Image (cartoon, rainbow, N blue to C red; front, side):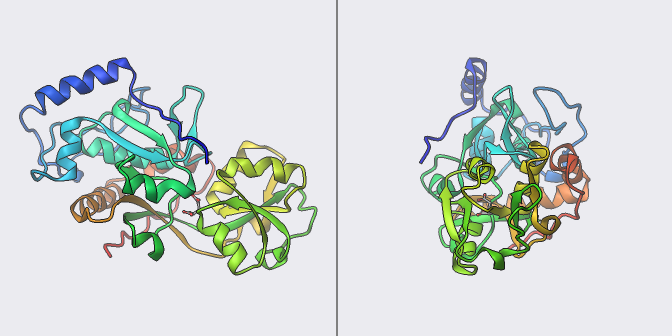
Length: 310
Ligand code: GLU
């Protein structure tokens, strides 16, 4: 297991946090209603997605929203190696649709982008990081499923992906679908839904690693015949490595992977509020804007999925 890298507050950010913690939010200009803000501000290094940051939002006393707003900071678990969704850029800060969705939640809490601490979560440590409080939320291509719902809670979904296959350009092994992978070496990531399914349902010889980017060299040098995970993650790798890889059957999917925002199991109030934030972003065009600024540079813009208030 890799040691999670930390990104986050510089000295200025820490100083600001300390000030916020002493003074607390002053006055009130909004009731914390998610419909009151959204995309519409200018984009800048400090506000890369052009989100309007709620000013002194009010939340029920003792709620997670109130605690985070008061602290002026939130720790968000995301991927650091997945183009289009969560990829650390040259400035050391992650970019992508998951990062933008995390920034939306932060903005509605009145937290500036620069006061978000991004923590790398890999597929296998997401539940643990939520359970032990390493992160406040996880936004990390994180499929909502029943097993995970036993130990953490999900807001969303905010996107629907599906499992697909990536092979070397030209598809030298002639792989047409997951049925062709029985007994074949296939790379995926431990703790992920696609890794489990390619073994349990298709009998592949799984070569498991901790991050999807670690599957690229084994595919390049022929140690594995395919990489499997969600179509949108694979599309990011195809896009980033021009001419090296391709998706089988143009990215045909064979599962449904609804992406949720992971949070603490018992925190229904926080989950309901995040669901309100997501729904408001679907209505006011913020979700489309965040998509188009990130994954939408490569992928078509879908309809946002209906939130599941299970
Ligand atoms: N969405 C799948 C999952 O949550 C695969 C992608 C990932 O591992 O992040 O397991």
